[in-house]
Length: 553
Image (cartoon, rainbow, N blue to C red; front, side, top):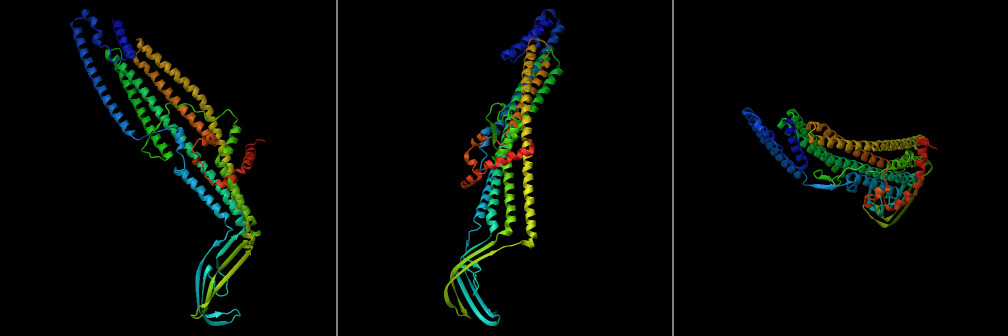
């Protein structure tokens, strides 16, 4: 009779799993066949058990109603949270990084500032224009040209192109005036040009770093959404096992402690699901901050699944990838431009004593005056001045100090460039190792998901055939959830390593060109030829420095 009771219970479980039935035969229904062979005491016991079963059913229905109400409230809360959703994917996230972003905008305006300083340095030798007037009156002693002191009252007025002339002296503020050091006119435009190049590469480096931050933030967002989805599926599996365990305990085929343990597991997976929800909302906020959009918007990834990305090739030798990074990374170009600017500044100090300072002036206008309060003899006046001087600062000691200062700046810039070379090489090597190792982890984690899924299905089938207790499925269900989350984490980490390697190598031109062209316009058009004219020279220098730095002939 015990085997017959067990068979009827197994058939009920199979019908629930295969046909979607939500009821299980009660113990009173299973024991109907024993009515003829039991006494009045047994019937009383069955009646008590039936009452307990009815109470348990009512409790379960109440719990289901409470769970349904809580689910409805959760759904309403989720709908409220998603009132302002913004669909996004990786290309659209990168496309949002443009001139309106505060980081990119600030960097680009620094470039414009540098080119404005270059414009000012290039016109240093051009004269300035001044126009105005001045009035002068003198009463009392006055020293004449012959040295004698005379008492004289006089006044004068000048107006026109230039101002400030008194008596026979020249016009101190010429109408056209050019005053500059010839070394500044020659070398300062070169210094300003190299500085502008450095600012331009710095702006590109800031944009590249922002692209990396946006890409990693999107990977985090997609990972959080997928983790929540996996935990939802795991919660459904555990709830199904918990229901079967309660049914076994209700009919006496299982332990109440097993049912309580399953309830605990359901609560724990719910905690994990809420944790994934928190990470999802936090990732959305971080991505919104990186993209400089309102954080009140809920960013929803358009990608349905997390799949491995193949962005950077790792089959090529590491030396070639490091060399590619040294050529493409804007940080290296910026440091090289700063070295060139420091050298031009040193050349200015070296040649400063050999070239003169120049002062050129031309003035014209009306000039008149007289003795006492008389004012007359108004007429035209012209002044032309030319002045050249050579200077040796502080008996030559100032010149030596200035040169040592510039030489120290050159050395600082060169060591900063070497530091960047080491850092770029280290970033490429580290990202390359991560890509290679995590690619192997993909195969291992994928195999773990297959075996865990197969184990779970076989255990569930075995329980459906009446072999063992439902609690025995718990371990395989936990292993399935762990393996799925491990595979998701492995894929996300692999994608992060791919993005890190792609960024460390300076991105690819195809990715940059796919973005709107207006996002890449930094410099003035008439400077494009000046920059590209020395590209081959700069690449040759970097290749030589790389060979010297890393010991390859």
